[in-house]
Picture 1 (cartoon, rainbow, N blue to C red):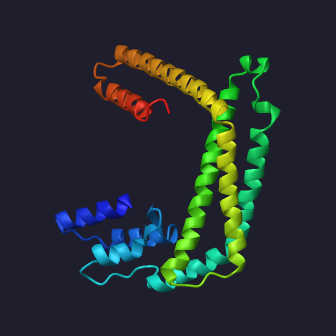
Picture 2: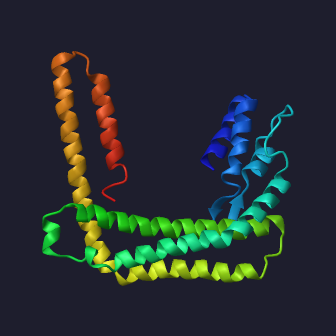
Length: 237
């Protein structure tokens, strides 16, 4: 959505049209037919472009017809949705089993291996990512029916309920382990902070080494500082 708004503002301010760039942005809706803004509020990139940023000259675009394209997307999503949810289900089972396995329990062995922080961080991230993918796929599926004014088949309700139950299972897993996960996050934050500091120290050593060989190191110092700022932009989380 940021790309669409920036392009519309650029076109409004400078009144410059680039048909090739317009075609490339238009084609992106093949990868994302609907952009979810908030809850059920959504926008189709093609409708946005044709309404807000339409070119003055006729431009050949692909897909040529938005209504036909959205209907084709609905048929494709409807056919593949059960297998997609089944794939999410297999990933969910593996994630829950691993979250409850002995490998994530505190033991003396973790003092000898610092990878346990990396493993736990990956597990937390995998659970959040899985929930995000399920929610996004479910929303796009439902909104495509709404956008096309189509009637949802009865067979889809069972798959939709399964997707909602999977989201609930992830929520329960995080709630039941919230105190343990909070402790993991504190350790992960501390480990990440130390890792960033080591990277900064290594970068400073390289800068000092280059300083001895080159008189002008302003560009290198600026690049280093930008990397440091990017590392800390989101805080320790």
